Image 1 (cartoon, helix red, strand yellow):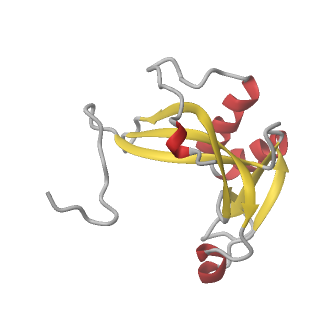
Image 2 (cartoon, one colour):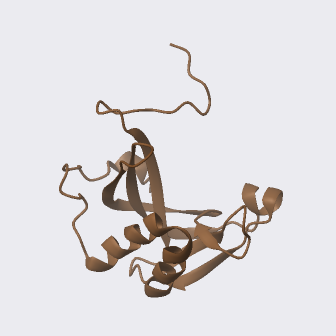
Length: 144
């Protein structure tokens, strides 16, 4: 089978499989990194331009309206901030740290689904959303 570089993958129920990370300054998870949107540079909605330690699965979020998406959202503790990254150079994205409560407010205006991810973190929910149980990450995802 030949794979295309940006080929979509689907699970058995027909959901498009996606992954996302919430990037935090420290393991206390009290400050989240948001990056400006490519369409509206003054709106912070994406994380990018960092390296870090993948900590845990926060939850699995489903969108069933127009498109069926199942997004696996992970917590990432930032260990290195890149001076330049592809989207900052090519389309001028900027990044900013926000207290979690403030990040939720920003995201509720522009990307309510992303705000849900941080709200779940704030509530201290378990790594699975109740629909399935997901094992912890293997050591190969976090090299020493």
